[in-house]
Length: 296
Image (cartoon, rainbow, N blue to C red; front, side, top):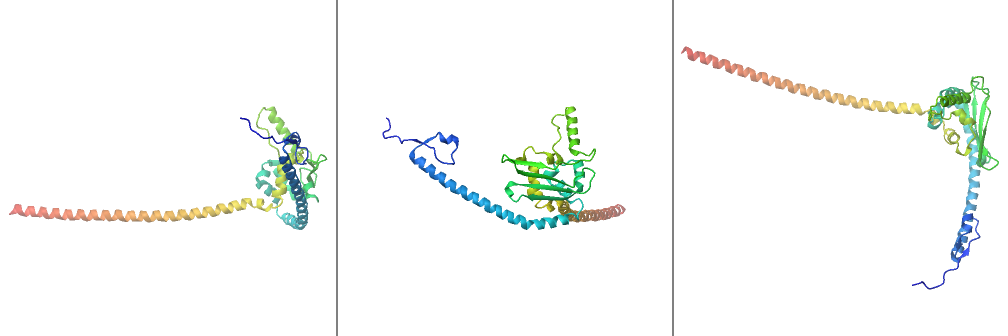
């Protein structure tokens, strides 16, 4: 049996800034249309508040960046007094050490200062500065990799051109090793990216994990990575002491048990000797008695 009653009239949704192209061809009944328009109005209010919050958060970040700056500068001055601070921190960091080859590690022994500088408008980008002592690898005193919004509005990056000294171009050496491996047909064994190949790579700035690690993890607190070996050794030594103490206690217990066992064994041997002496004495008496009887 067919249902009675009129079917609600449907109208096409044409208003609402939050709807996409796919929604423009959909039809809704008047009640749904009204609800959707009200939801869209609420969403516009929420978006406006979110935008206002972002602006206020940006102002707070800018304020505290200025407050942090003198402490970062003081920290860098103190770090300069510690030989090989930055290369040690890099080698101890799991993600950064993964892109360091042996020659690059040697080169980073000349790194004396690291600095992350955010733009005035934090959302627009930042730059990472690497300061070097005079070294046998390149002529630059400082090399910079910068991240910013490109003309299309997408993240982009650029970096200083490194002036390598003759025969010391680490990027070129890595490419030569890769070409050699391809010539040897060793598929699946291509060399991974290295620190300086990362520095000069501008393929996809939005997915630059090494830059993010340096900016958000290494730069805020490098001391934790410089101290990693000392902390591990310290914890390891404490564990060894505990184990040695337990071993000493166990040894003493074993010694005591052995002493008790020895005492019991000696007591048993003593008892057996006493029994043997009594038996010998009785046998001697019986023999003498038998001799006396025979004389009679």
